[in-house]
Image (cartoon, rainbow, N blue to C red):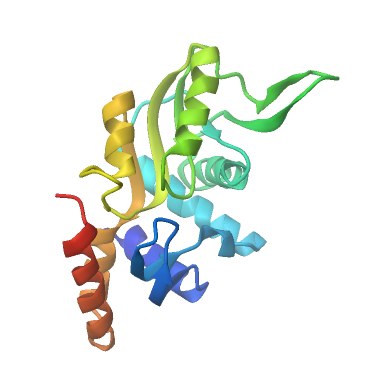
Length: 215
């Protein structure tokens, strides 16, 4: 496992953004782990989070022109990611985010930042559960004749939706784009195996994966 992945897991555990126990998800499933990126809520957290997003983006080596963060959760993510790309990789990338409500004065419109018109857009968000935010973002991209270059998220749960595919697999299939993540469920299991004290957690997570995991 690449170092940034294990460091991200440790970061998430330390901030209690990643927890183990019994959690009821929106789907009604009982999950042995829960991830909440909203708990990365300090300046230091955001600086570190941006570094992990930047590391995953550089690792993926995808081609894009601008990074887009969908409101609201994507706004601090895109901001911290482009700062980290500049500071740690000397890569200066334009960024953009949307307003939920279009502004009717001043510059107007519902986009803030660099233009995405006819650009290759990398979209960043925390997780993909049902893919709703991605579909909403795609309408914005289509209005601007932009191409979705890829999607980058924190965690890929590698979990089936209502059918056999995960929401991420559905996004890949629908929009013909790469979806990358800082970590996947496989990465998390690999990390847990390295810690003797987490044997029970590994068993529970693997049992959950065998029931709900994608093929």
